[in-house]
Image (cartoon, rainbow, N blue to C red; front, side, top):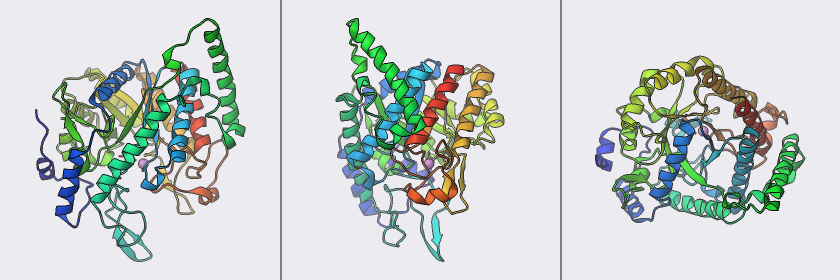
Length: 444
Ligand code: PEP
Ligand code: CO
């Protein structure tokens, strides 16, 4: 079963693709990308598949997090470190307070292309092509900036390489050492109630580490963490060019990220994305929203993972807080009854977006938490495992989601709203979320 060509995939009319003005420069960018070294290795993808298999068996929990859309300007040492720091803190909270191994997956180093509900955007009577992520066009609302530019595909590669290089240095070079557990809790966070709760937890861990050291135990696991990258594989040109045949297995892997997923808008069974994904050997995800039926889920599993390989397929459900309790059970029930092996992950963000009275795209922290609670309740009711969460979050003190312990209100959104697409949990809200989910895990 060999990988279809880019032309074969285009014949299937992939949705959510840019319309480039000049085909010649698209080909040139694709040819160049095909010569670039892999960003991740097939063996690392296999390792992650094994970890996702543990998630699907109920032996581990997935924490997947990062920006809705990364930006080229956001590739700075501070930004990458801040995001990683919160993810490490969240992972420690979940591991320690939830007593479960946590698989750490960044939504980063490749998350540059966005599906949009409309092809165009209108402001004050002016209509331009919609912003589709830095992989496609510029965010500035000018005709020049909104023209899709294939050169940006190479910029995605370079930005992803720089990000992943820094992440790899952080997670293996001492920054992620568990003995640093206090140093991740800095500045304004430290004084917040969630930050103080974290301090107490870190102090417990310190005592455990001191005990281990006293008995002469010094396991390697304390010094480094396994951390993986993921993004929505949306743009056919980029993803196809970054798909390579692994020399060990002779199988195709997408080497631009460890884990890739199909979005809610591109999961049609006969569509180009499903056709492309079914050939990959990476661990993959599919988003399932309220319009997905149990039969859709089964058909996707059959198409994407016909051999029922554990860890290969993750269903990322995003129903919304008001729908998860009724909408999710039929899917989980049928998929489980058929013996289909999947990991179930909750995306509590994309079903809970609304526009504030002040005109910002936002989410209520309480809705996000309520969807995760609903997800846990459904799985507890069915005797299945709530395998993880996917959150849009940032390491900074932004004001994009309302509510949470700091009770951010609609008027406060203007203070520091920086997301170019969807609203993210800020640093304090992310920690609060981790504590609440740890509590749910303890009861699961
Ligand atoms: C996203 O994850 O940013 C996204 C667009 O999600 P969905 O495909 O579920 O709408
Ligand atoms: Co989003």
